[in-house]
Image (cartoon, rainbow, N blue to C red):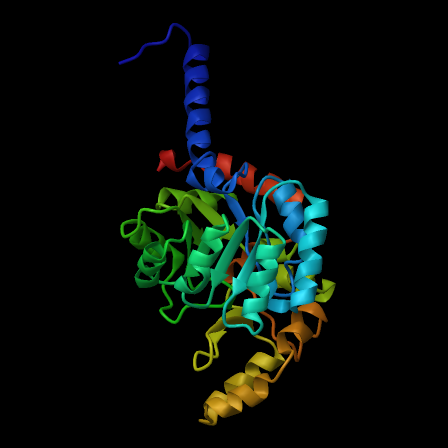
Length: 336
């Protein structure tokens, strides 16, 4: 057993070991894969993730993602060009494959030489080979072990395993992040990113202890000054409490929503026993834009995760990083 001449020497050794411990988490497969400082990825959220948010996250040492899901192809190209001007760090684009114009979007990403692409809501085989032949890094979002394995077989560079605590579109399995991450970890060998319900640094560290190499954070970045969502909606996020969100619309595509007037109108359709068509009619078009981008808190679709209960203030992206890293360092699980 190692002995120390002074108590100060002991403290220095502990501090040195702690430093090494922190670096082993913060400098890993994800930071190396994407050439970023911290293994923190900002979720590509519709109506939130424009170039201002993505570039701010990348400039802070994480990986910023432009959310293509709420953008027409020409708008996406504009945001990519602006993001290139706003940061010299790596950034990416999140592409939900269930949206229209997918082939045009992929072509724009290739033409604009976006280095990193996160795909979701579709088959990872569809575009992975094409993108990797172009020299791009590809990650795919899943909600189950089964699809994580399929991602590895499809040749993706990393998997984002998202628990059902997450906001927006979600998995039908309703598996929590706490259960999902260690299960995915033991079934794949490629880098793993944890998502769903992560908003503070202690959760980030816990996810990495469970086997994740990094984290993807959505809701916490939604409530930042750089996010492109409406100020009314950002304020609603910080006011949200435990139980204010719920997974619904499972007959269409499961989505976690804030319980507002629109949500309760959906609940009434369920109570009346009406079918899928009634839900589609009620949902209509532009409902998400109306809520999150235009700020209609009553009749808009408001997508946010359960971690909104942990978000108490609107911050800059830089402040979010400062808090995350401080909380990460202060989370000492060895004392238990």
